[in-house]
Structure formats: structure tokens, C-alpha cells
Image (cartoon, rainbow, N blue to C red; front, side):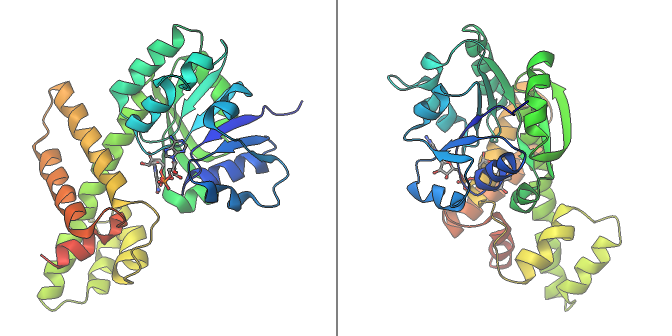
Length: 293
Ligand code: NAD
């Protein structure tokens, strides 16, 4: 049986390799991005079709994937008249939001869409561009059991560790919290490396020790050598997106009424770094910011 065609909206750093993996898995993909350059990545891909608009792509497929910057963009695309997608989607459509959106807004979107017979699954990802390219992303999934079961074969083309964490919005909650944990580890690592270097210890050696000790984390394992000490600052994940994720996590913790002092402190560091480094900075440039303080 042939695999379902998919409308894929948001062909940025993550969306392009994810859509390419859907093509590799045998899905036809109809893509759209506001950036007209986005389609150049699909040159020679016979299963790919560039749509004239998000609505044109979404109307033609029963499965729609969004890989957009944030909830503001998602909500505008869904609900803003006259071309808001939601008003035009047929009952039975499955919408999968794979960007790192706000969990509370996603839960609202799920309820509003469900009222018109459209299923919503949130399936944000972790692992960065590298794992998007090799199809080994971690995917945390929120949604009703039947809807998640329908999304699963599609998500399996893009990720390796797929965990259904709860109802709609739960995937986005876990994603924001994951990035809070990741971002705090990154800041701690940068502060430690800069202090050690000032004391005269080679930061490469320090990181070597961290990776063999209890300080090991995602930053020490994958970012310090490749993107920080090398000076490339080219992980492909923008600092502004990490700041957005931290704002989402902080707001979520606040809403839950649970302890969040450290999240507040962490967010403040990322906001100051973004102000100093500018909107185009990669998130690994946090090292440069901390070193320059
Ligand atoms: P990106 O900025 O490279 O891509 C986003 C794309 O969305 C851009 O190409 C932009 O032109 C497009 N876009 C914006 N508004 C649009 C609209 N209204 N219609 C159509 N296209 C529109 O960002 P990215 O790094 O690919 O991240 C996408 C999402 O995935 C974000 O939520 C981010 O937080 C999350 N994420 C990123 C990474 C990473 O390593 N880059 C990792 C995990 C999760």
C-alpha cells in the first residue's frame, strides 16, 4: 500500500532534513516555507512538490506537519482569517506540530481543532540538525491514543526514540522542560570552562575530565569541542530559539505553581546573551558571551 502524502510547512534548518527523510521513507511531500530559497534543498527529489501557499499544501493532504519557530507563528497560520488553515481543513485531517511550541497554546489548539473533527498531535523533537539529517531524533509525543497511533508511522521516518508522554500539549511541555535542563547545563559548563582557563588550566583538558566524570552532559559531549572551543559556533540551533524555549519552560513552571528560581536565573542569562550577541547568534555562542563578561 502506498504511503500517505504529507503537507510539510516550515522548511528551515530542521524542516528540510526531516522532510527529506519522509521522502526517503516513501511519502510524497508537498512543502511550503515563506523563504523561497527553501525549495532549493529538494532539487532532483521527484517526490517533492513546492506549494504556492501553506493553505494550498494543507488542503490537499490528510496529514499536515508544522515545523515552525514558535506558537505565535503556528497560531497565526491556523487561525488568522481569511487563509487560516483551520477553517479550511476537512474533518479527519491529522495536524502534527513538530516545532517547539507552547504547551498551553497547543492544548487549546487541540481542543479547538477537535471540535471540528481535526486531530492534533504535538511531536517536538530533540537532537539538533545532525540527528534530523540521520533520522535519529528523539520525539516526545502528546495526543489521544488513536491520533498518536496514526502519527507514529510518519514520525518513525524522522526519529529513533519516540515516547508518547501524555495528552495533547504534553509533548510540548516535556520539550520545553528538556531544553531548560539542557540550557542550564550549557551555561554551567561555559562558566566552569572560563573560570578554569583563567586559573591556567587548558579547557580541552577540563572538558576531557568532565566527560569522564559526573559533570558530563550534552554540552560537554557534543558542543564544547565542536562548536565552542573550535570557535565555529555553528550547531544550527539559534540562541533566540533556545531563549524562546526557556521562556516557555519558565511560564509553564509558573503556571504549575512549582519551584522555578533557577529557571528564572537561567532565562535571565540567555536574554542578556541574546541582547549582547544579536538575533542571528547560534546558541553555542553563549560560550563567547560568558567569556567576554
Ligand atoms: P528555522 O528558523 O531554521 O526554520 C523555521 C522556518 O519556518 C523558516 O524557514 C521560516 O521561513 C519558516 N516560517 C516561518 N513562518 C512561516 C509561515 N508563516 N509559513 C511558512 N513558513 C514559515 O528554525 P529551526 O531551527 O528549523 O527550528 C524549527 C523549530 O524546531 C523551532 O520551534 C525550534 O525551536 C525547534 N527545534 C530546533 C532545533 C535545532 O537544532 N535547530 C532542534 C530541536 C527543535
